[in-house]
Length: 100
Image 1 (cartoon, rainbow, N blue to C red):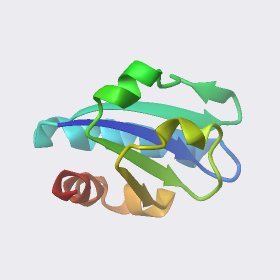
Image 2: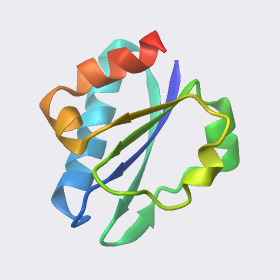
Image 3: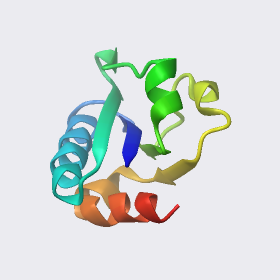
């Protein structure tokens, strides 16, 4: 399974990057290929391409704010969660994506 994800928090500092790291760490044992774009204080980093999005089975948006350029995910399966959900139990979040 391939997942592309966007993480973003209101301040765009610690939680954005912590959530990205947790998703990457939790994906490997589940056999999930994941790419994570962060939208934080440094702007958009590791920006997902249209090809990345098109190859993904699910788009995971882990955010407590409106993300930038959301329209590029139109037509994709999208699963939205809070940053807290990812930080608390990233494996559970990814398993829910697998069930979609």
